[in-house]
Amino acid sequence: PYSPLFLSSSKHNSSVLRCFSSDAKRDFYDVLGVSKGADKGSIKKAYFKLAKQYHPDANQGDEKAADKFKSVTEAYEVLSDDKKKELYDTYGHAGVDPNFAGNAGQGNPFGGAAGGNPFGANFDGSSFHFSSSHGPGGGQMEIDPEELFDAFFGGGRRQRGPRRGADLQMHIRLSFQEAVKGIQKDLNLRYQIRDATTGRVDVKEREVMVDVPAGIDSGMNLRLTGQGAEGDPGAPRGNLLVTVLVEDDPEGYFVRDGVDVHVEVPISITQAILGGTVDVRTLTGIVEMKIPKGCQTDAKLLMRNKGIPHLNHSTLKGSQIVHLKVEIPKKITKRQEELLREFDDEAKCAGLGISGRIAHAAESAFGSLFGSSGGKKKPKSKKNKSEKKHSKNEEQKEETDAKIHMDKDDADIGQKKQTAFD
Image 1 (cartoon, rainbow, N blue to C red):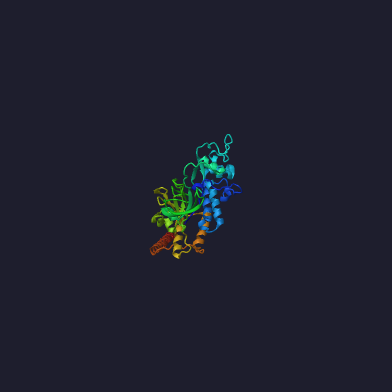
Image 2 (image 1 turned 120 degrees about the horizontal axis):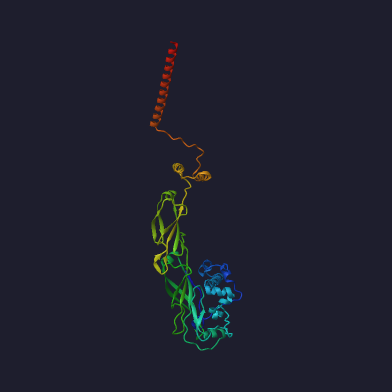
């Protein structure tokens, strides 16, 4: 799950210069496939995508993939560092070439100090920093002017004490859960050193234990002091820099966003309307989550302190964001359809339904999901027997009253006629 990024070998058992040629080199932005105006986030995302694609562990024996991996790592090393990026944007590859880095701190990779000093104003007997890093987050080695002079012109100058060992760098792959919880890993180091006396190159190999803290993420570096290459007799070892690559959750359930994680949880229509509870899987186990009434589609619920631990602060954790997905059934029973239609009628009567063209569109959508009503007329409401009997009695009473009234009128008319004849 891990592989060394480079094998270090140098004079006096330490790296002083990295082979770097600015001739015919591809543009670093082009190597990562980003624009010159890309921000750090885009550069980092592009690098990790390419690093995973061309990593030696995933391309055993493929030299082309190994070369591409080195190229994208070199490009990321420069473009992820603000100072190096500024020099590169100004002077191109020469601006970040270690062989011209003596005056990089003054913004001019070619020196150009007053008086024509090609090594800059700091070349006065005091030491200055000279980068020998080989990857993102790589360390820097301190080189004095005499050593730099020997590197350019060769030669026989007096050594000023034993040299510390070179820094080594390697990558380590972690699973999603290993990065979340932290883990101890055994690293197999294999590197080269050259004996300054005999000139012989030896291959060294040893095991190193590294404690990976909980909450680590891709692109972060772990520095193991004194675990690098051996130095001169009496000098300390260099440091070991471990760059971490974290894999995604293999099930695709957890999606990491810094210290937060996102998950999707399906719920039914009834749960969305009436509320309820649902079991949710978290990083520490299954918990029961309450669903409020009236949840809409794509509603998000926050579960605090259920995310990933903050690095170096294991008591502080991020959040788990739960995305609710309302599941619409494709098939329903006849009884379910009746209940849904009654529910829709009640909503309209209560003034909660949709009206006008929207209602027509909603009814069409309702029909496409649950089936059309077939154009049947709405059934008339049925009256119970007592209501029917009461209604019939009322009608008979009205008819009797009308008949009595008519008979009385006839009697009055007859009496009037009789009086007229008399």
